[in-house]
Image (tube, rainbow, N blue to C red; front, side, top):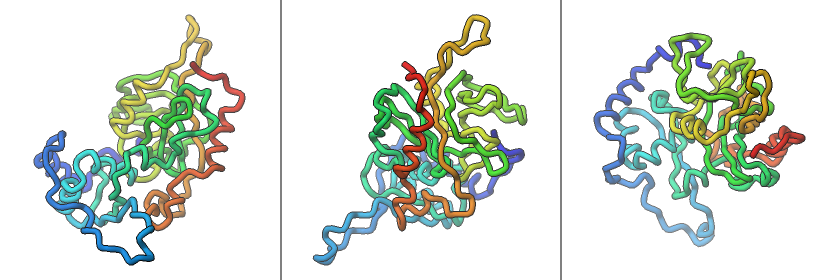
Amino acid sequence: MPVPGSYRRRNRFAFLLCVLLACLFPSCDRRQPKKPLQEPARPAPAAEKTKQVPRFRSYQITTVKELLQLRESLGARRFDEALKLNRIDLRHARQGDSLVVPVSNESWLDLSPFPKTWKGLEDQPKLIAVSLRLQAWAAYEEGQLVRWGPVSSGREASPTFTGLYHTNWCQKERRSTFNDEWLLKWYINLDNGNGISFHQYELPGYPDSHACVRLAADDSEWIYYWCRSWVLSPDERMVLREGTPVVVFGDYAWADPRPWTQVIESPSLAQLTPKELAEALRMLEGKTVIR
């Protein structure tokens, strides 16, 4: 759930940025980049010809104009993906920030910290995985990655606990139980007793909820229609069939730099390890396959 007061606070820089983007750039990307994001490639010395081209670069936000230029250079779709890579939405693209920006041509799935094929999930028709360490989610169908994106999980005082959940029931809109002024869109309940859920809300670039798992707008809507809800008995006292399984795993290191910001210097830090994947799989042991 959102943190009290966070919805009303507005950064002046972010507000101006949103206004300018709304005025200058329509939802569809009609402009062609005037200048490439990368500098012209220089011939590499013979010893460096086999060196891989970096997948990311750092982009310092100093003015609104520069951020607009970044959007024009990347295009609307890639710009949105760049924000997601930094686990933020446009509202939280603040002056002075340094963004990690993709400069290669990989698809969004290629940039995922999750593996494209996850061995051990072949018999699982659908699964959602949430990594607390990487603040990212992924959807799998029979072990194949079909979508991923950023999250903002529970803050330090009210963490999102690890474990196996299920997508129980859904509502397109729901008022928060903490504050009825907070409208939570694409609400997908994960823990009926404690009110933990997926839902659309602000992505500040770090865990900031009241234990829920916040999602980007397009991701939350996609999961809403993709997942399966539970089936209850006629008297609604028993769960006859659980919804889509959701495994929440890992630990967010509050004292360390955010892993996704280290992807240029230390790419492995922004990827899931075999140990983490094994931990997530153990959460599914003994559970009936949902079809």
